[in-house]
Length: 451
Ligand SMILES: N=[N+]=NCCCCNC(=O)[C@@H]1[C@H]2[C@H](O)[C@@H](O)[C@H](O)[C@@H](CO)[C@@H]12
Image (spheres, rainbow, N blue to C red):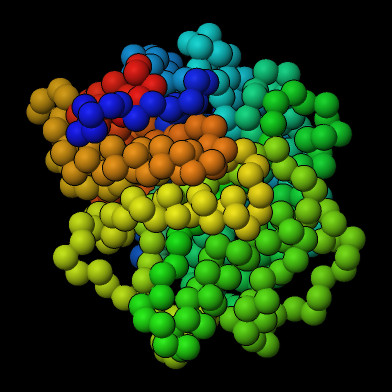
């Protein structure tokens, strides 16, 4: 239902979906010949993940995907965004192919197509094969070749019937979380390594797009980035400069090279001595290989002030007391989604955009005693962000679809299972799925293609 006199209608053909990622939902990380990933290692390293949680079982989606696809169908989902676990299909990340891994994902794709649900595949959602990390992982320049070979294998296997692909999920989080601050796998803490990883992530992305074009695969390929609009806390020169550094570091660091062929100028200041010499022109050309669509993951905004103690961008977020916040301490700020989408259009042109993730973690009980399980805050937050997408479309932004994060409650990385983003509640003790009220609210929007 909506409070407007007239419903907010979405364009004909607007794609409604939900998203997950392999390590967060599949479980069975070493089944059927799969090799370990860096997240298998990281979660099994004491102290790295809250409560010692791991992805050993997760939502058992590796085995229960037929049931989950039936649930997607019952909600009227038209597309499902999920990721391939690289080390299932290439246990050492390169060389030897594990046919059982390829067969698994072919079965998932075929089951989705049978259910009338369009697959949207993410090639890399943070779970690097551990064997590649042993060779330096994202710090080794050869990883662009390793990724291109992996991508080519997937395009040859599934490229005839998967309409949407993306190379990387949130390269900013991979470099910032995995190499700058060390809070995500592989847990390094170095500005020098973060800058190197960022460049190799961009190179791998470009090589992946080139591999897609060379493979003759049908469909369209994109890049998925997390964008968080930065608003200055004041108009003081210090706060304005800090806001630009924060925006360059999170929002322009990857989009400028991919869509403009240049690096955000503030990054040399942010990285300081760790910022490498200008990259070779031929590498910048690979990075700039044209993409068909952009995936935007939106969760929150930040209000920014200068803060000399905040490393590396010397800027920090000003708490927005009084505003609604999620369990991940993110301010609920739907207007930021509209602002972000219009910012992308104004800075990079009107390329097709999918909202590849948007959602919120609010408290849900460990077991669901009723179906649907009431989740008013998540339902309210969903409606407000869909209205924000509608406003961006009204402002001329070419938004093609929206994927709710997430289909299922799942392993929220270093937070373990303590944060629940799912439209479907998962009782981890029994693996029972229960629809939340937000799932039914979303199903009603999909059925009407309107809010
Ligand atoms: N400071 N700060 N601000 C916010 C920065 C957000 C960065 N994290 C994400 O976007 C992750 C994305 C990921 O794809 C998914 O795998 C995660 O489960 C969701 C939920 O966490 C989101």
